[in-house]
Length: 490
Ligand code: ADP
Image 1 (tube, rainbow, N blue to C red):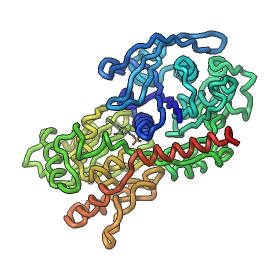
Image 2 (tube, protein in one colour):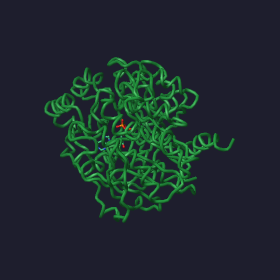
Image 3 (tube, protein in one colour):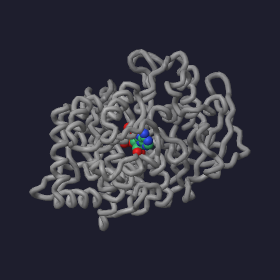
Image 4 (spheres, rainbow, N blue to C red):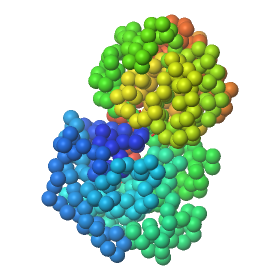
């Protein structure tokens, strides 16, 4: 199959969250499985084109934007250690900026940047003379590819049998914009914007809705989230739209790209380890704590509970902050966090660090290396999310024997099972209610297990044996692509 992946962030080139991990893993797996997968993203300023070996092509794109045409360049390269091709769309004014979406707040013209990029996808495909079977677009930034495909490009021979598949990574971000701008940039015009149209929701443009309505198939990142978002609590207002397209909405669990996240081979971590030599995991913890300035006088064996996360309301920090202070004060565990985001949360964690300089390790920022080392070194990984479409870190934790403590929501519920000591089954600690009491109880179960060598060993073995590979995920997507294409073969 010829598959074009369109995304605003793709690892290892540009990343703010799990979206980039998925848009890396999928094309890489498809390429390994024999498909012709190409990936297109903007040439953000932060991408080091020399390091990744990108070369500027001679192509110039003429990208229609409303009544005018804008021009863009194209850079060509590959994912590291793969033949899977990657194209960067170059536009000085739109993409040569410090941030991907903003710095620190969203750019005022994101609507325009997203429309331009979505339109440029098609012009790139034409310039490269590819005939795609599938355009796989990720999240609201690229949602307009679905509308452009159906409305403008399906009339061209090259796209006449191309199916559009739209993947929802997080419904909390929908792209709500001023219709006068977006309907103009996209060329559809205000005549297409009326109550109930595929572009409109609550009086404004809603990119997520547009992607959902125009796509041939819609996927989201876990089976449980696919069910949850049909309900008002989780749908962020789009349950009506999602139920309307319910027959075409499929949940596919995200997978882990184990070439990148495997404690046996991870070049980023201090000491490699596997389930055969778990004492090396302990050595990793000591080495990490040493690197943070702790010494043998600091009770290095205290359970280490970590978080690696964006600091937003979604991630459940409100419930843990009711209890963390006391729990750390009681020396129940040592806490470590790597995160960036909302200032109120940053201040809270800095306060913990000030109060417990040796038992609260706080790193505010974004740091890939630190993320790998922290996950490898910790005993537990805390993910108390209010909602979590899939979540990748719990799957990294499982692979590294770092036991997840999670709230049962979205993909967390699909990937972590409560450990049952009597049966010795399960991979983590799970609580249902979004409450501080339930969080604390799950913590106490986890800490009890830590002090039983037998059960600690067992739960780690269970966790490390779980296969959440992106290989499976990639195969599931191909099945959905097959269904999306069926209409052309009838
Ligand atoms: P989300 O996409 O909602 O942020 P996921 O769990 O799906 O959550 O993916 C988060 C990804 O971002 C993981 O790869 C995680 O390791 C990474 N990550 C999150 N915060 C940081 C950080 N501060 N530094 C480095 N990596 C981070």
